[in-house]
Length: 386
Image (cartoon, rainbow, N blue to C red):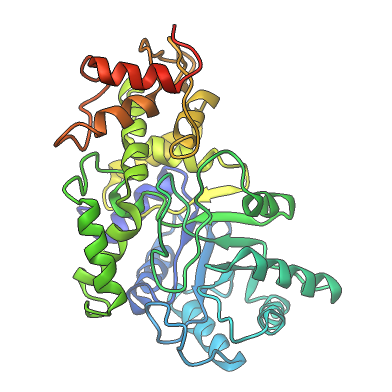
C-alpha cells in the first residue's frame, strides 16, 4: 500500500475497523511495534474505541514446535510486557495463548491468565489452536474456582477444509455439512471463534490460484514433509504445507461453487468465502490480512451482506451429500437476489465438469452441454429431474 502501514491502518480505521489481531511472533514483534507507533501518534484514533488482540506464550518458537521450552509464569509475563511496550498501551483487550502445550495442565494457564486480568493488563483471555476438549477443561477448572474462563478461540476456519494440519500444533474448526458439535459447544458456552486463514492463504481469494497442483503433487509434498526434506521455515516448506492442506478435489469444487455465486451477484470470491465462514454463527469472526485499501473496502461491505440458505447449502454439501436439482434458486440475499436458471445444482455441475480431461476449473456457469453419459450420471444419482 502506498504510504506503508500507517496509510493502510488509517484507511482501516476510517472504514470502521476497530479490532486488530497481532502476536508477539508476527515479524518477531514488528507488527506490534508498527501498530503501536501508528495509534500513539494518530490524534484521530481513540484508544478506548480500539480492541487490541495479541498473542503470546510461545517464547522464541516461531513455528509451533511441540518440544519447545516449557512456558513459565515469568516467561509469559515477560512476553506480555514486551507486547504492551511495543503497542504503547497499558492493557490489551484480549490476550491469547498462541499455541497449546499438552505437557502442561490447563489449570496452570488458567491461573496465570487470571492473574493478568486481576492486574488490569488484560481484559479477557483466550486461546489459539487449542482443541475443544482442552478448552472445555479450562472452562471446568475456571468454573470450580470462580475464575474467568477463556472466552475466545482462534482456530483455522474457512470454506476450504484442510485435509491435514496446516501448520505444526494447530487446530481447525472447518467442516463439511451444517452442524458440528465442537462449533456448537463454542456457541453454547459463549466462546467466540476467531478464524485464521479464512481465505486459505489466497486460495479462496484468487480464482485460479494453484490450479496446476495435482493430487500427485500433493502426495509428493506430503512424503517430503513427513521425511523432513524441506528446510523448516523456508518458502518452499510453507508452500508445501499450505498446498498439501488445501489442494484437495473437494476444496477445488468448493471454490468453483463460490466463484459462481460471486459472479452471479457482483461479488468477489473472497467476499463469498468470508460470508460462508461468518454464516457459521453469530459467535464467529474472521481474521483477514489486507495489503491494499480495496481489500479493506471489500471486507467492510460484508457488514450488509449474508449468504442465504441455498447458497450455504450448495457450499456445505460438497463431499457429503448428493445435490437436489432445482431450476430457480436464490444465491445471495442482497434484496434483489439473482436466480439460477440451470437444471442442476452447483456442486453436481462442478463435479461433472472437473472430471473432464484437462479441466480444473469452470469459466462460469452454465457449463458446456452435458453429453449422454454425463446426463445419465446425474439422472441416476438424483431423486427427480425437472
